[in-house]
Length: 296
Image (cartoon, rainbow, N blue to C red; front, side):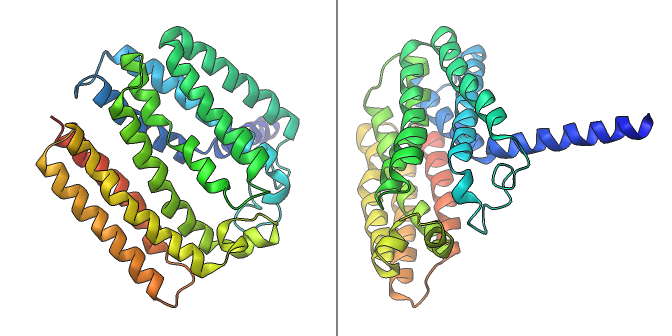
């Protein structure tokens, strides 16, 4: 009896771990951090009532987790073809796919309904647009058919600051759109750097990411172009009055460093540079952090 109970406990623990993996907690965490920036600027550089933050984070977290599960559900076939993803629970047949679908769909729909009730309808609408962009436009429609999938997916990935802003204001003013466009452009060198590392995996699964469809050199050129575009975009919070001169200095220095690393990579013989990918994460954290610290 004791052995059976232990086995059942281990099975439950393993299943819970698998479902958490499918929900991609790292992505959920980054989504909430980005939303908090939108909340902060939407509430005039102070944090609002904690109940609003709680409900925004809970519903947005559930919607994001459910979307990630739906992404894993739809991509389970190609995940099994790639070394990087073949051990994922659905690709490895550790979980019944119908069970994942039965959990993920109600999670997304329920979280959006709860968000409309506890936060406001606009926030639910913006979040729903992000879910649709990620699950339908990116995952189901473009990922397997066009090298432009990352650009379209980047739009969905840039929604969280707008969600946070809408949560406290009930509208989408200029600061929300500035944060949105910074994230749209930032996601491109971030995603393309990773695509270069795993281009053979993507080719094996017939996923036409830019390194597969266009080649390594054009991908490196695009990374440099997007980093160049980040310079004027990163200055907009200062121009609009969201942040002061300390932020301006930080934004210019960080953006020039990002561009310099991209240009160095472009001129090199390397096919990938994960240090550039790592810096892209550091860049966004420091940029948004400086924006919050020096907000006016």
